[in-house]
Image (cartoon, rainbow, N blue to C red; front, side, top):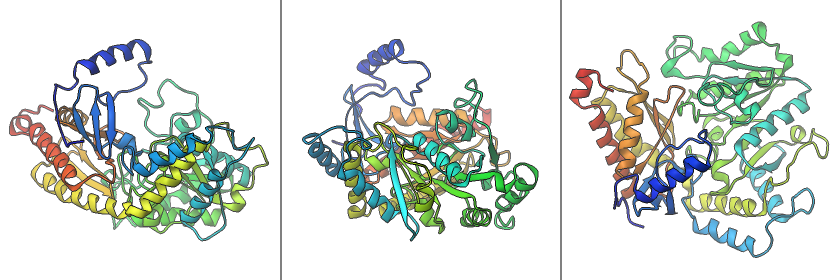
Length: 453
């Protein structure tokens, strides 16, 4: 497939026809980030039903780290379809599930005995991690963070911070969920400035134990090493280490939600490695399956072995196709050293984005880790008022010119990139050129001086 090729206006006639059918058949609650409908995809490129080709900086929301239709993944899926599709691992087992569990026990942080089992999604992984932590500790409470996202199940929504569109109207939520500030240094909840703050937000956890919930009642803390939907907020390295130390002190299970950060995205196989933290439980999903649905829960053996037989599991969790795809995905990541590629792409993006920030002060912050990068848009550098309208305009400008991007953040004012890590240098530069053009168009003098956003 070529690079950007637009043969018809986006959306084209076939996409418009599909959009009409969609509105008649699919609930309105299923959001559409773009009006694009795919025909085929390969590597970092997507071709739509009207023959337009796009550079994909969204990656199915971080699912396609190894690229669309990775040859190794496709081959592994084909081999498995020739053998069998489903038995349910709890009824008739299969070796690929065990091999994948062994592989995750090996590559996740921590030199201690581990156990792994599989579910269908990140939200299911979150639910099971909390469930196991509660069973192991015999405690009810869970601490989560402002600006976090942990899924759309009932417990996932309770742990998620953003009200609209995820939570409003879906109440009530499960009890014994307590929320504290994340180390969002650009918008510090304590009005402090790093590093002089000495990460007060982490130390504040001890105050929570005095004022809100007793430490001996807390089963787990669940945290994204880098916020995903919350805006790609990258905390100081000592934030996670301090929290981890406090958890150890009080016998609290430290759960790292690496659904979006895991599997090479942040410049290591897992983001916790970048912070020097060995979580008690690490959950993964998204890019683990190379495009197939699978979630993983890996943890200390004594924690994971706590539930009785039958206490965890599911009919489709760790399907034969998904396990084979995941094994091929991990092997491809290691063979191609995609974590190193993530770092190289991230450095390239940051170099461009910092130049953009110097030119347009409406870019309040450039941040990220490895290939998980973002810019936060504001109305002015002084006010830091979130600029969600500009974010929407820029994303539309980009997809109309052949580049797919995503927004993020509690205020929907962050543009994030989750490109397949196999993207070529030429494709990436072309995509960044389009983003730069979009920024220039949005923040032209007329818009700035007239206040148009």
